[in-house]
Image 1 (cartoon, rainbow over the protein chains, first blue to last red):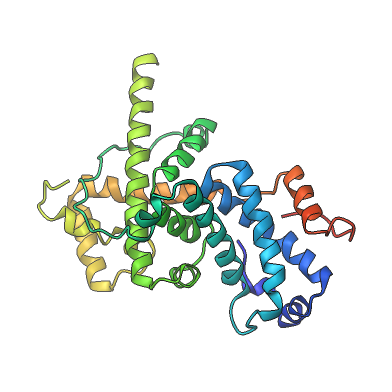
Image 2 (cartoon, rainbow over the protein chains, first blue to last red):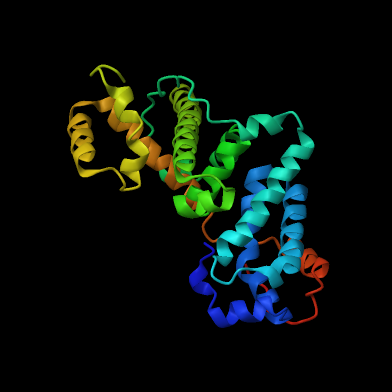
Length: 202
Length: 86
């Protein structure tokens, strides 16, 4: 994960002073994570690459104004998250309102009870399961998806996630609960089918 | 679920429980409920597994070589000789 502990105050000073070597080091240390976030958010390699490049171009321009007391990690993720959300808005303009207004506390259906606790490791780690993991993420609304990806996949705290998205921690927690439960339900449906086909086909 | 009545009330605490953020009193109540409710236990443990699967899927991820090269070119960083990685 990207961690502020990796960036010393001296390094941040060099960055904000426009030191190209420090900038290159920032890119090397963080670009895989930023690309991973964009790819899962957008499920499209070209879009993810565009977001990656735009993130660092914008970061470079904004670095002289970076507040040194704040977190470089959340600052960089904020640029990337905004870029990714902008791509979604451009592609689906009608989704803009949904994305910002996704905290309706509608009655959730009771969770699927499928016991896949004892599935073998090779089933859980298969290429097909990996594809399913991304499909399930694609089914989340952008507002839930970005919270889940920042908190659970990028490993950021609730506070950091809230800071990046400019919402309060309770909003992050509520969205996180909904995202996790929905993903678990989708995975349960998928593993149920796998278990049934295993029984029928041996 | 719901064979023991209040499963839905417990469900909303599962995430805090997994994150170790559930207050002790609620934590004890949930543990007592889990001891007698197989369905909630399944949901809780598969919820934990779901999060683990996603976390594991991102570990050790690297930037594809060609994406890395195009990034450095776009940022005009491709001549400074800093080793690639991610």
